Image: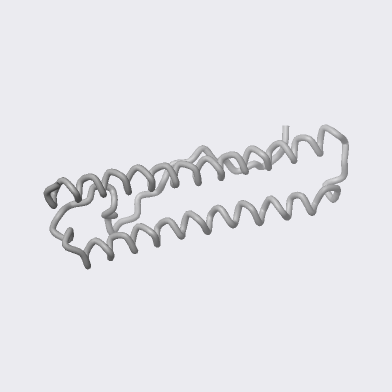
Length: 118
Protein backbone atom coordinates (compact mmCIF):
# COMPACT_ATOMS: atom_id res chain seq x y z
CA UNK A 1 0.00 0.00 0.00
CA UNK A 2 1.38 3.38 -0.98
CA UNK A 3 1.93 6.06 1.62
CA UNK A 4 -0.93 8.23 0.32
CA UNK A 5 -3.33 5.28 0.32
CA UNK A 6 -2.25 4.28 3.81
CA UNK A 7 -2.72 7.87 5.03
CA UNK A 8 -6.17 8.02 3.45
CA UNK A 9 -7.19 4.77 5.15
CA UNK A 10 -5.90 5.96 8.51
CA UNK A 11 -7.59 9.34 8.12
CA UNK A 12 -10.91 7.76 7.17
CA UNK A 13 -10.81 5.43 10.17
CA UNK A 14 -9.91 8.23 12.59
CA UNK A 15 -12.40 10.66 11.09
CA UNK A 16 -15.22 8.13 11.39
CA UNK A 17 -14.36 7.25 15.00
CA UNK A 18 -14.03 10.93 16.00
CA UNK A 19 -17.31 11.80 14.31
CA UNK A 20 -19.14 9.02 16.14
CA UNK A 21 -17.64 10.01 19.49
CA UNK A 22 -18.56 13.68 19.04
CA UNK A 23 -22.08 12.82 17.90
CA UNK A 24 -22.46 10.64 20.98
CA UNK A 25 -21.40 13.50 23.22
CA UNK A 26 -23.89 15.87 21.59
CA UNK A 27 -26.62 13.27 21.92
CA UNK A 28 -25.78 12.72 25.58
CA UNK A 29 -25.97 16.43 26.37
CA UNK A 30 -29.25 16.68 24.49
CA UNK A 31 -30.69 13.76 26.48
CA UNK A 32 -29.51 15.23 29.78
CA UNK A 33 -31.31 18.46 28.87
CA UNK A 34 -34.50 16.52 28.18
CA UNK A 35 -34.07 14.76 31.52
CA UNK A 36 -33.82 18.13 33.26
CA UNK A 37 -37.06 19.19 31.62
CA UNK A 38 -38.76 15.93 32.62
CA UNK A 39 -37.58 16.20 36.23
CA UNK A 40 -38.82 19.77 36.53
CA UNK A 41 -42.15 19.02 34.86
CA UNK A 42 -42.71 15.87 36.90
CA UNK A 43 -41.99 17.59 40.18
CA UNK A 44 -44.40 20.39 39.33
CA UNK A 45 -47.15 18.02 38.12
CA UNK A 46 -46.78 16.00 41.32
CA UNK A 47 -47.31 19.18 43.32
CA UNK A 48 -43.99 18.82 45.10
CA UNK A 49 -41.99 21.62 46.63
CA UNK A 50 -39.01 22.88 44.62
CA UNK A 51 -36.81 21.60 47.45
CA UNK A 52 -37.94 17.99 46.95
CA UNK A 53 -35.49 15.98 44.89
CA UNK A 54 -32.77 18.60 44.93
CA UNK A 55 -30.04 15.92 45.22
CA UNK A 56 -31.28 14.51 41.89
CA UNK A 57 -30.92 17.92 40.25
CA UNK A 58 -27.46 18.31 41.77
CA UNK A 59 -26.41 14.94 40.36
CA UNK A 60 -27.81 15.88 36.96
CA UNK A 61 -25.85 19.13 37.03
CA UNK A 62 -22.66 17.16 37.72
CA UNK A 63 -23.46 14.79 34.85
CA UNK A 64 -24.00 17.72 32.49
CA UNK A 65 -20.76 19.39 33.62
CA UNK A 66 -18.89 16.13 33.01
CA UNK A 67 -20.24 15.93 29.46
CA UNK A 68 -19.20 19.53 28.75
CA UNK A 69 -15.74 18.73 30.10
CA UNK A 70 -15.62 15.69 27.82
CA UNK A 71 -16.33 17.94 24.83
CA UNK A 72 -13.39 20.12 25.82
CA UNK A 73 -11.24 16.98 26.00
CA UNK A 74 -12.27 16.13 22.43
CA UNK A 75 -10.90 19.49 21.27
CA UNK A 76 -7.64 18.62 23.02
CA UNK A 77 -7.74 15.22 21.31
CA UNK A 78 -8.00 16.91 17.90
CA UNK A 79 -4.99 19.07 18.75
CA UNK A 80 -3.01 16.04 19.97
CA UNK A 81 -3.78 14.11 16.77
CA UNK A 82 -2.73 17.09 14.65
CA UNK A 83 0.54 17.21 16.59
CA UNK A 84 1.10 13.47 16.04
CA UNK A 85 0.48 13.97 12.33
CA UNK A 86 3.09 16.73 12.18
CA UNK A 87 5.66 14.45 13.81
CA UNK A 88 5.17 11.53 11.42
CA UNK A 89 5.92 10.70 7.82
CA UNK A 90 2.35 11.76 6.98
CA UNK A 91 2.86 15.47 7.78
CA UNK A 92 2.64 16.42 4.11
CA UNK A 93 -0.60 14.49 3.58
CA UNK A 94 -3.84 16.27 4.43
CA UNK A 95 -5.81 14.10 6.82
CA UNK A 96 -9.31 15.42 6.25
CA UNK A 97 -11.28 16.14 9.39
CA UNK A 98 -8.31 16.18 11.75
CA UNK A 99 -7.10 19.71 11.07
CA UNK A 100 -9.17 22.31 12.82
CA UNK A 101 -9.36 25.96 11.86
CA UNK A 102 -7.88 28.47 14.27
CA UNK A 103 -11.29 30.14 14.50
CA UNK A 104 -13.60 27.93 16.48
CA UNK A 105 -16.92 27.17 14.84
CA UNK A 106 -19.76 26.77 17.33
CA UNK A 107 -21.43 23.38 17.22
CA UNK A 108 -25.17 23.51 16.90
CA UNK A 109 -27.15 21.58 19.46
CA UNK A 110 -30.83 21.39 20.20
CA UNK A 111 -30.41 22.56 23.77
CA UNK A 112 -32.69 25.28 25.04
CA UNK A 113 -32.67 27.23 28.26
CA UNK A 114 -35.60 26.12 30.39
CA UNK A 115 -37.17 29.10 32.13
CA UNK A 116 -40.19 27.30 33.52
CA UNK A 117 -41.80 23.90 33.39
CA UNK A 118 -45.08 23.53 31.59
